[in-house]
Length: 112
Image (cartoon, rainbow, N blue to C red; front, side, top):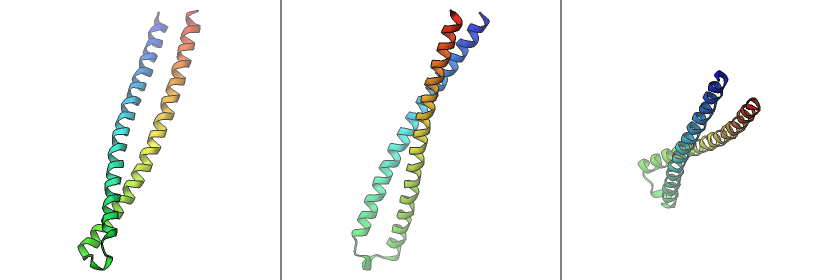
């Protein structure tokens, strides 16, 4: 009876971990979507600025373009990091599923 409570507690812990990982996946997906939109916007701005005659750009526009290029570079790095986090999250979810199966098998074999 005491071991059942421990196993149930472990099951609940795995469920909580799974739910937390699902929540994290949703948060990361939303962040990824936002970052991708910002990246598209930044690229569109850079494209627009690139189409302007280079000789007619004022110093302010040149600084804005450099700042936008830096921002684009930072966002690309952030996007790479988000993709790494997403992959890590998926790996953890798979590990969680495997651990849940092990606990289930142990619970079933202990019950027999």
